[in-house]
Amino acid sequence: MLSHAFEDGVLVVTLHSATDIGRRSALSQEISDLVHAYRPSPVVIVLEEPATGGVTVSAVLKAHRMCNHLGVLMSVATHSAPTRRLLEANADTTGTRLVVHARTDTAILSALSAAA
Image 1 (tube, helix red, strand yellow):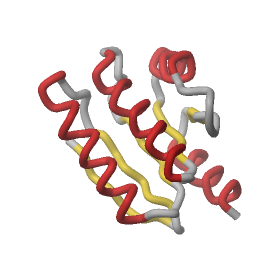
Image 2 (cartoon, one colour):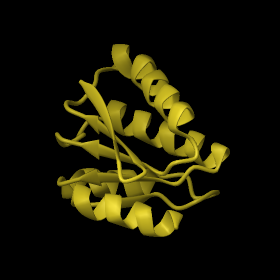
Image 3 (cartoon, one colour):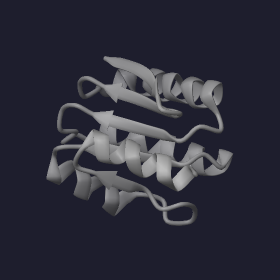
Image 4 (cartoon, one colour):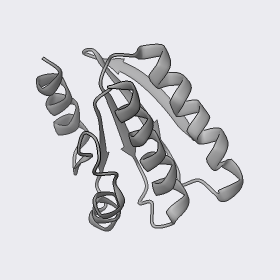
């Protein structure tokens, strides 16, 4: 369900499938553990499948709030336009803005340049 890689100084966390309510807490904890382990590196969360349900979006938005609290830059990549809109509409606006990209390579390049 979740994998990660460290590419060019960016932690890339890939969610391979949408999650259900019973797995949300574990997913949030896995992401948190990775962010803490690779801190202060920027993070890109890649959603391979559209997150039409609120559970996966909720976990990603929770990760964004945590990254804001830690001072870690985070962005999201998903090819799904509805998911991008859902994330942007519900993102926390009190800290660093959540940037949502359509392509993973663009998200990684943007994270690299923003962190430089």
